[in-house]
Image 1: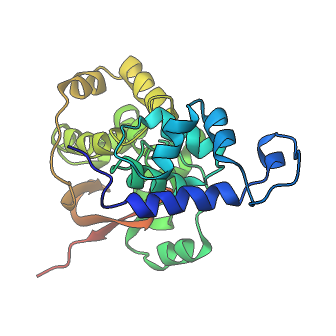
Image 2: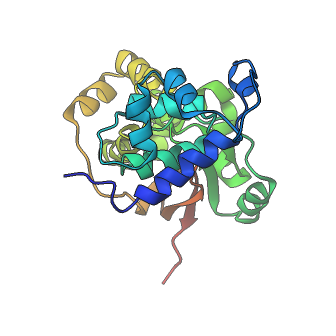
Length: 263
């Protein structure tokens, strides 16, 4: 049975601290009479989150009560938690991380851009949870043709199943595509239901019979890091490939393809 024993004191302190940093005006309430303690009252948080005062008090005390993901999302909204604080709340109260947004548009940090370009002649690009290609170096552009597509369609999964040129790049595409789709599915399972990641899947099911067939098989494999053969100028070249997490909160990964060293 789930228990809050391990996180009881931490959860109580976290909720209290986040209550106390907000003023009534921060959440659209009048200031009213002078308050003896800073921040919002428990009854105000409970009302805004749509639960009873007693129930919310029990939660803030870290009692072992069941909480839904919907309520925790409401509470995060009321307390104006950012993405990192929201995740922390879920781990304290729910003991598992929340569902995450699938699409995260952001500015890739300059240091990552510099590192990525310093990796040439190795192929390097940055993906988010939805597999949008947010940045890439010259070597990756030459091989994968990312620059030939608008940012809105510069999505690795979309291109894998809809772009004939990229398809030809992968030797034995019919073997590699299911493995790559399985890797995407692990990220898909972490995403919320109302997000662009689901829109991407729905669109691909409509335009690609192969994607639809593979997606409905629900295959899940281990990580597909390792060796991959790409067809470049009519020649088969073997690459070692891996991905490195560069921003856990925004689910950004740096993917690197390095030509296999001759033995």
